[in-house]
Amino acid sequence: MKSKLSKTAMGILLIALMAFVWQCTSWLLSATLQVTYSVEADIFSVEDDVGMVKVDLTEDEDWQEHRDEITGIQRILFSSWVINHSDSTAAAQIYISKRCDIEDADSVKALTDLILDGISVPGNDSIYITPQNSHMYLQEPEVLKEFLLEGEACLYWIAKEVPFTLEIPDSVTIVVDFTYAE
Amino acid sequence: MKKCFFWSVFVFVMGGLCSPAVALPVGIGAFAGLNMPIVQDDAGTGSLYGARVRLAVIPFLAVEPTLTFFNQGDATTEVRGEEYELDGGKSTALGVNVIMGSVGTPVGLRFYNVIGIASHAMKQEGTEDESRLAVSIGPGLEAKLGTQLALNVETRLHMISLEGGGARKNLGLTGGLMYYVGH
Image (cartoon, rainbow over all chains, first blue to last red; front, side):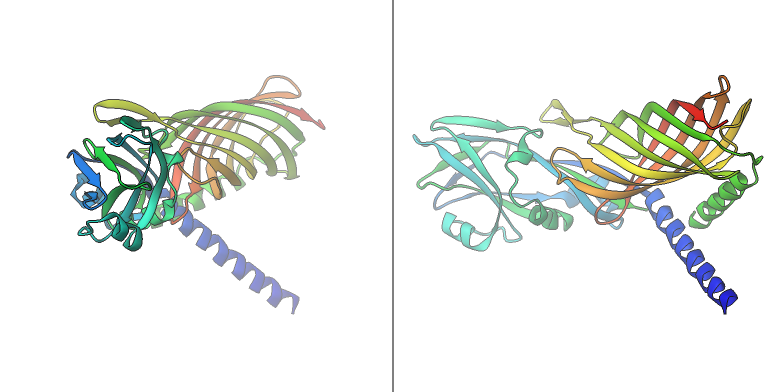
């Protein structure tokens, strides 16, 4: 009886050890990949004609090379100028969606997901969001990760206050740290 | 590749078990060195340092509770023609190593193998703080400087699991001092 038990314990231990070694092997074959994606088009955003930019990571050569091996996203940072052409301070926001045909601010709020908030831009002034401080504005990193894991999404810039007039020169640069396993 | 890795681990473990067997005293030590990322775009070379206690279980086997502080170097990325340093992150690891081979012997130069498991409390700007499991493996070399003091160098591959799958791989090159009691 005792011998049978010890054989069972040894068997379980061996299986656990093999599973552990197998897991280590998959870890050994993984790496992190940093993709920097830029859209260089000036866009304007007003209440009835919101500014939108399409992000398409699938255009990136590194992404294409590892597209079937990507296991997750570790970090998303971004960089963008935001110019407020209104007289009063604007609290700029960025929303994300699969849809790229939304035109007004109310529809953006109703149909898309808020990912960045609290970007306060004084009247007739501008701010530059750097990759280092961009994480302070990120509201829903998990939502953003879900969209970017699929490679394509549309970003909309609006402000909480209406009316608003925002200019986003050179749109946006997004830095995404992927993990992949060969 | 996976088969190759499996057999490499097997040979490594058996090699450690077959090293000259001697009784081990208790060692208290500290170490420091380089922490080099392997195939990681988002981190640069950093440092690591820590402390450990080496306890004999049987002559050729010791366990080693250890506390290690890992610093990943910053990664440089170019955005709109300007270079930015992005935080590579850091972690505090509490773990246990298993030492296979002859360490803490009264005299001479000795080789040993290390397998470790640890919990890493990870921090990186732009990510949520998280706790991740890690394993490490690698050889070490110890030289006695007297009856109780020893100098050791280790090369360890640290694999820190990541959410969603995969792991960060870091090569740790460390040097350290160990003070043995119980001779």
